[in-house]
Length: 343
Ligand code: NAD
Ligand code: TYD
Image 1 (tube, rainbow, N blue to C red):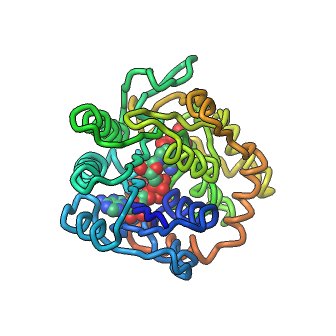
Image 2: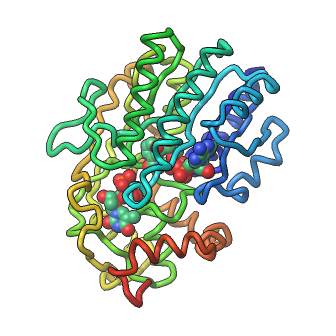
Image 3: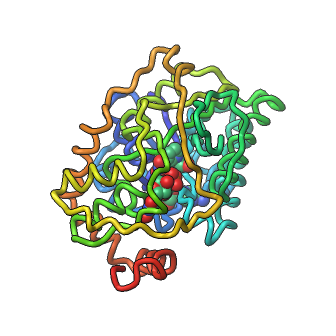
């Protein structure tokens, strides 16, 4: 039996990954660690907690005592790190927390991997560390040119992995994936934010003309890519994860209107709140990971339809979040001046 420490297990991708591993590998135990920030929810782990091969610890990844204690008590073999402050818009308001988790936290996990001689650590980075590209595709050799406090913090953690491998031979691998979508995503990111607002016939704030491009990946493909890298990747290497899912924001918004049967008048173009920090286009070349035998299995429009159905049928989960004071405070602070009484 192998034991994985999965950090950020109460968030969107981390919780999906725990489900994926427990279902795929009967020989795996999953130890979850999560600080339960605004983005981490106990209700997201409700089904996981029924599984006897899953166990949860609350705590921060930058807390060395917590991390070392869990590794020793649970005889951890692998770390898969999802824990992060993950929202670009929040990073423009409060960048300091991003440095603590996305840089210092990664360093603590790397040191623990070395100190306890773990078999491997996988760090989940992002394509946003590359910055923006007008017409090229990001390969793993593309220079890192992050443009927001979030993506710069992620680049910091990502480069700590590189240095730890070079300096200490720490067995770490890094993945960089595009924008994810699917079940259990916190309703502040584009897709769940817009889907939940449209269900309630509220207008959706599209930044600028909506011509920015994101390279979308269904969350299950991200999870299978991560697991493939954990099992087959070469220590010290970086692997892009992508599914040829490029779409403009306006095109995605119109698909949502169509799927939900809502009028175009629910789109509200607002002045771009990210300004110069808004990356225009992400585009991922995932050929290095494909050469290891991995392929994405989910096509964008069919997965988008499944995602819309999921949010339509799981309203209890997201309405509980929408009712929380910290969610309402963020929406008011960030969108208040643009949405006015539509808030
Ligand atoms: P999320 O915000 O939904 O979840 C993050 C989780 O980490 C939350 O449960 C939160 O409570 C926890 N957390 C935050 N700070 C912590 C700390 N100091 N210690 C322990 N736990 C902490 O994020 P997500 O969308 O699931 O993203 C997961 C990872 O994948 C992140 O590292 C993110 O950078 C990366 N990523 C995300 C996307 C995307 O589109 N969402 C794409 C590529 C990469
Ligand atoms: P987001 O989901 O925040 O992810 P990221 O910043 O990591 O790409 O945003 C995706 C795109 O959608 C991005 O170009 C910004 C845009 N966007 C809007 O137009 N309106 C919104 O309310 C949000 C949250 C995002």
